Amino acid sequence: MKDERRTTRYVCAFCTGAIPETSPDLRRVTIATLDGFPVQDLFAHRACVVRAVSPEIPLGEALDEEP
Ligand SMILES: [Zn+2]
Image 1 (cartoon, rainbow, N blue to C red):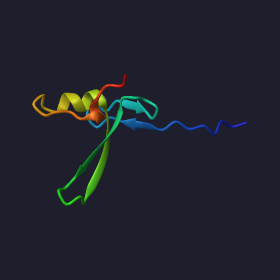
Image 2: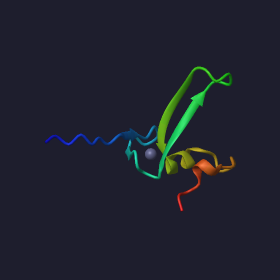
Image 3: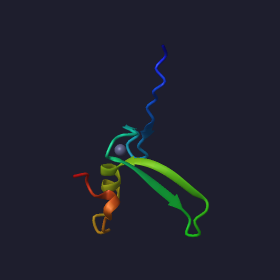
Image 4: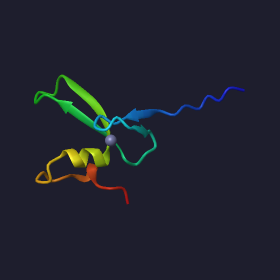
């Protein structure tokens, strides 16, 4: 019998590494104009986003490490 289970994988926009859907490190990065359209969603490792953001910019809860 064919296994119908399917695993969605995401590709990090910064390092192009695969990120399993179940990874606690998976983040969605939404890019939009100030008006909110057009909009594009990218996916990334939490650590890759943190590396790309200047240390002078405060990081919010979405970029906290998983406990
Ligand atoms: Zn990455």
